[in-house]
Image 1 (spheres, rainbow, N blue to C red):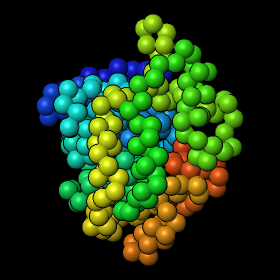
Image 2 (image 1 turned 90 degrees about the vertical axis):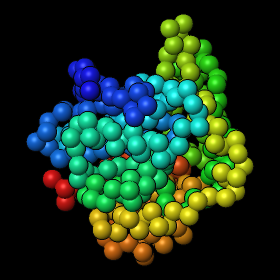
Image 3 (image 1 turned 90 degrees about the horizontal axis):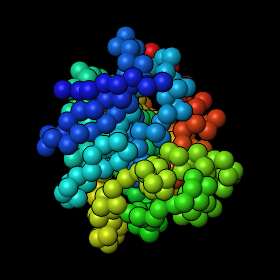
Image 4 (image 1 turned 180 degrees about the vertical axis):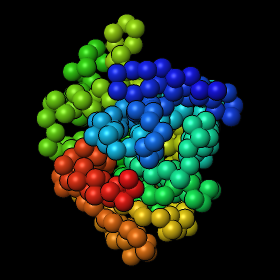
Length: 293
């Protein structure tokens, strides 16, 4: 049973996983007459990643954004071995069943894009269109090594400004080279949370990094081309950051060659991953979604 609470621009939804964890999602508008657009975030991110995009699209779509377990307002899992994409997919299936949604359009950033491929393979017909943000069926090991270097950080920051400066250093200047300090501050407010004592910390369970402590995760990636083939029956657009160290240009080109209804978009001066509010991203997303009104 879902619990729903109204906020300024979306409704808070709390629902249960198969094991009884309390999980969270945002429902922008809750207008069942609009086509539904499901948004799935990346490894250490949460539903706030899509807030500005949701406000941009809200007049045309009912936007559902999810906090995967261990992120944002969803409960941490007492068993860290369950911080896996297949489990996250099961959680999202539970949400969609709870909301009685099917045949939705979906946007997935990084890990969320992997989930799109996995969910489409498990339940053909679930999606009628997909936007995959800076991920593909082959992952550049350089990006995985970079993520391995920072995921699971347990730092506390004295202020939002301190958090912004630290995240800028952590991400490196190659990822968002054109970001101003205000951009990094906004980034921090999407990815961190303020505790009761006023300290700032990342809004995810550090234990979700456990799989990245195994070097085999980085050195022996899974072949996901069969999963990508499960999307061949629907329109797909993949957005790539020009500086991405996760999705190579070669892999993007191979995706385009293999898919019968595919659009490739590259966002200049951005690494992994585009925030999706860049002017080029918004233009591409608006154009792609015209088909799904």
